[in-house]
Image (cartoon, rainbow, N blue to C red; front, side):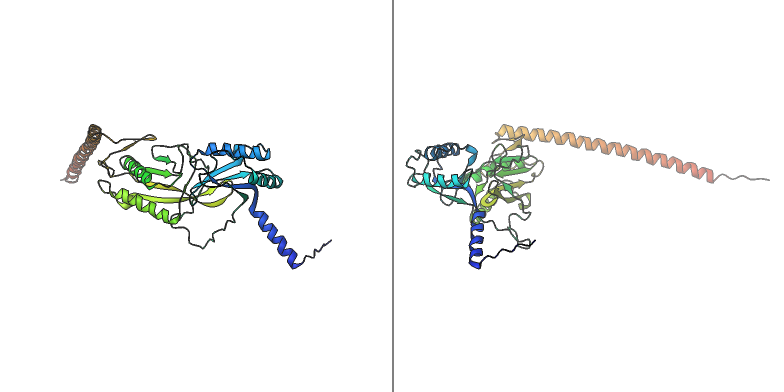
Amino acid sequence: MIIKYHTSTSSMTKLLAVMAQSSLRTNALFLGNLNNERPKAQITTMILQLTRDCTGLALDHRDVKIRYSHPSNCYTAILKLPTPDMQHIALNHIQRCQQVPNGLVKDGRTLRVDVYQKPNRKKTPKNETQDRSTADDLSLVVGQHLGNETRMLEFKEMSNLNLQYLRKTVSRYVCAFLNSSGGALMLGVDDRGNVTGTPMTHRQEDDIRLAIDDTIKKFDPPVLPQMYSVLFIPVLDHDEDEDCDFKVIKLIVKPGRPDTLYSAPGGEVYIRRDGSVQGPLKPRDVQEWCNVNFRNKEVEYQQQISNLQSKLRQAEYDRQTSSKSSQSVRKTNSAVCSIL
């Protein structure tokens, strides 16, 4: 049996528009102009209190997602609700609510409440040129766990872009990696290994590259460009699965030249320990490092000399054995038997 549905062009257009709009919506509200000078946990508690006082809904802290908006310099939040009806009720009640917790909204602004619409994410064509900083199309998601810090891996959370903090951190950890076994510094990951990301524009990305290059150029002895690399890894929102302007900065450093201590721009010297950095080293620490390094090299050279002497003795023994064998062969060949 075949059933045919007859739908007018205008009705079909309206239906497609409604379907497209509903596909972008989730059962959530958007809250803007939130106070970014308060801890996120405190802002979350205030939002739950506001929702409970205005609507009677008892939600969980997991239903609130707070992020920093770099363009507006404030926090924004997404408040998830169980059903579309609750979304509509919460929107009306919170918009008219006069009992906003003190400190929730940033000074000089008013609370912004609206229906949250999921942005329409555009997929990049396969033949389209990828971003210059992510040729391998690597990406992370908010909250993704990257493991624990090690001797060759360091995490630093940088929720807001701060070039002064960036220069100081790069100076310290690049110096430590150069004086050790190399490693990677990841900015935009908290100490527990969870991805948070750092908001930045393409122009700020260029500023970061210049700041890192300018800092490393001041090291003594000079650090060659091929000894380090900088990656900007896009961070996707895990819940909304959307591209966002957050990235993780990954600075990969190769080990420096052996028997050399590199110093940071200010003259400080750092070395890497298991999961930590030691420094700036005092003069006696530098001298002790040199003494230990020289002693290790002395032992290494003595071992090499011993190996060479052993090979020399073996070669001399082989030469003497070969010489005796040659003499024996010559005597055998020269023997003549005469029969009369």
